[in-house]
Structure formats: C-alpha cells, structure tokens
Amino acid sequence: MEEWLKPEISLPDVDADFHSSFIAGASHKVEIIVPFDDIHTRGLQGLMELSLETWRRVPDISDQVMEVSWGAHFAEYTTHAAGTVISPDEPVEKVDRILVGAVAFDEEGLILKEILLPRVDTLEERITAEISQILAEHAGMLVYVPHGSRMLQKVIEETPSVGMDIVRQLQGQLLTAALDPHANHVLQKCIVNLSAKANQAIVDDFCGQVVLLARHRHAGRVLERLLEHCPHQQVEPLVDELLENPVPFFYEPYGNFVLQRLLSHGNATSKTRVATAICSEAGYLARHHVANNVVRKAFVCCTPQDCERMEMAIVPNAQE
Image 1: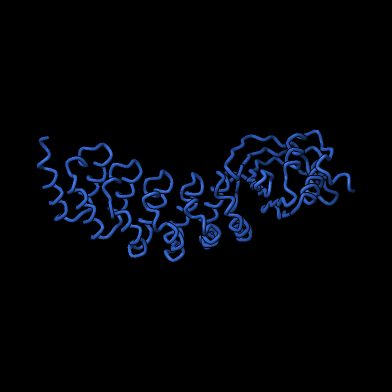
Image 2: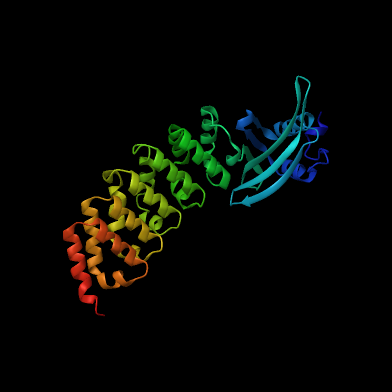
C-alpha cells in the first residue's frame, strides 16, 4: 500500500508523462474538485487514489492536452478525454469529453488546487444551484482563468443570487479583478445582473481609484457598467473623482468612453460639468481625433443651454 502512494508511482502508458508530472508537482495540500461529477478530494494521497480509481474504471483512458494558458499564480488547460467506462454494475459506456482544468499554485510553485469543468459550449443544461454554489466558493481562483471566467458569467446569468456570493468571495481583490483581462468580465456581469445594493461593495472598493480605472483597458469597462446600471447617488463619489479634472480623459483611448457613458446615464449636474470642461478647451477638444467623440456625445446628451455654451466656445476657434 505504501508503494503506490509515492510520487514515483508507475503510471499507465497513456499520457504517463502528463499525469506523473502533475502528481510530482502537486503540493501535499492539493485539492481536487470536479463539481459536475460530485468529486472533491484533498491531499496527495487523495489525488493518487482518485487517479488509480479513474484508471481502474477507464483502463483505456486517453487525455490529449489541447491548449494551456498561464498566469502569475493560475493556469488553465483544455484536454480531450476519451475511453471506455467499465463497471460491474453498469453497462459498458464510451466517454468522449472536452474538459477544462483550472489550476492554482502555492508560493513554491506546486499545484495547490485543481478544478475540472466541462467546457461551457458543451453544456446542454442549466447549471444546478448546488454546482453554482461550489463554483462561487472558488471564484477567487476561477475569475483569473479564461474558461473559469466564462463559467462564472454563465452562473451569474442563470442564477443572479449566486453573483452576490461571487462578489463576497472577491472582496479585497475587486480592484485587481477589474484590471484583469478575464476577471473584469465577471464583475461586469455582476453589475448588470445584481441589485444596486449588491454592487455597493464594488463601488466602495473603487473609491479613490477612478483615475486608474478610467484609463485602463479592462477596468474602464467595469466603471462604464457601474455608470450605466447604478443609481447616480450610489456612484456619485466615483463621478466626483472623474470630474475633478476631466479634461485629460477626453484624450484617453479608454477614458473617453467612460465620459461618454457618463453623458448618456449621468444626471443633469454631471452633464453640465462635462460641458463646462469642454468650454475650457473647446477648440482643441473638438478637433482632436479622440476627444471629439466626447464633444459630439455632449451635444446629443446635454441641455440646450449647455449646447449653446459649447457652440459659442467652439465657433471662435473654427477659423483656426
């Protein structure tokens, strides 16, 4: 019994290198979760036992790794698993599945946790409430990998109440999530599908960081969703930060979109403040290849009085 618990275990020939390197690279605290198959095991021994049980039930199993993506502390791989399930109590069954594994590493670079999921586009049914809850509990890991992010977005769409649990799991790292190319999509989905009260945690974490957010490719989109879907009084602290010195955002490749969103969804006072900013540098803003988009949006969204002010500010510069 002791022999097969060692990392040097002799593995089947099929993809032996992949499996042996996985086991050898696993922390003793490794946690394996397969929520769709109701599998949850901890520790290196549990990983070994799970691997052996898989090979006993599917002796001809074949795993072909199709794609791998890496991050600072997380990785994700897509694999094509095929084989024949042999069970004394059930008929022989062929298995052919495309699975995605999300992997987290500890400080030493050893595998600490793996969550194995079906690929989103292969799911034929809604995700059950129980599985949604399991995914939400591990949102702090799943949001940072491509497929994990898509899976959480699907969960939020199908069961918005679970989105509140996801936001709670991400508290303390909401700003980091907003800046991430995958996690930002989960935050956007939460903002769109959850109540204003549920989104207050996001607003609170963003206070004092609006300049960074508005200028960022990914985080700027999260800020736009807040301006679209939250009451003005809720996002007023963010708007005040944005409009404290708004002119630089006119020229920003991402910041200009945030200002346009504010013009579309902000209150009259906010729109007037944007119009006043336009009047301060009307000639330059109206002619700039990026900033002119905000100016044109302002003429669509602002009051006739504000439009008249902007027009008077622009016209004297028209002949330059």
